[in-house]
Length: 67
Image (tube, rainbow, N blue to C red; front, side, top):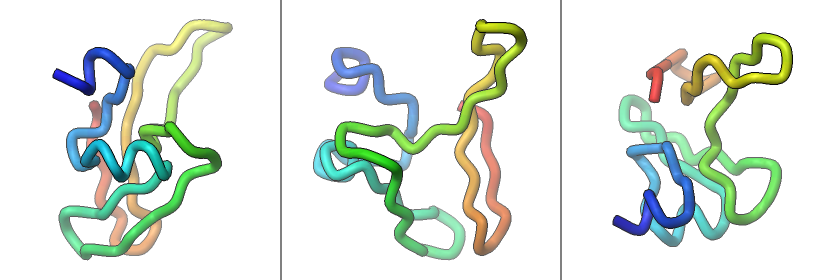
């Protein structure tokens, strides 16, 4: 429920991870830190100025999932 309230789209983040802007890859267990606090670490595909897709990706093991 907290994810809807704060707009978190990453299913692999806990509330504490979201506060610190980090997530742990479910495949290789590597911890990744985002660019700021209160960040869900999703990457966005844009078309014009509109978000058309959100996904998470692990650069180490290449895990990628659309969210």
